[in-house]
Length: 108
Length: 121
Image (tube, rainbow over all chains, first blue to last red; front, side, top):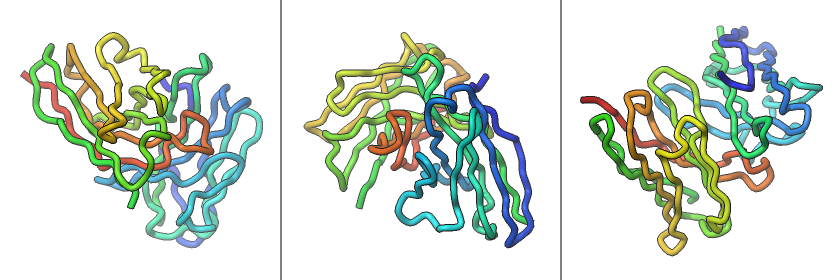
């Protein structure tokens, strides 16, 4: 079982705002990273640290963290944002890496 | 451009061995740590192993510890995953990924396209 918990599925109307969350004890000490994966493609790195976007990631993507919960927010969701989203961090032992179970985002 | 290209996947019988390779280009491979991550059919991402830029530190997931070994050859810009004692549950797409510089060692900022391993008799 994963040490990071994500909702299996979330939906959002086109152009609206959606928040995808990730919960885990390690998030009290370490920032989560976020990845987007579309069907048949490799994951894409979309967020890290305290709300930092890698080059090329649209500004509508933002991140936040509070307590044991990290969030990825998409403000003004687009059809191309429909994908699976995964968070990751280090585990409680410190030397291993963990992923959340993933959230399937549907844009209606 | 920055690129990671995996190879070595295929169909293998349970109990047999396989070695995956990942060739890096477009960046200074010798200064980056590297990960292997896998994804079983229809499932989520699962971390497999990590190796530091100089090979001094290596860690692997409990599920593969003792069976899989991560290594690298910096002279060839190549990352490896030696897999032995393969089981049906090791069937997955295996991705190599570059360790991010600002993400903590657990972050991955560049991913390859993956190579598929199928363990079946």
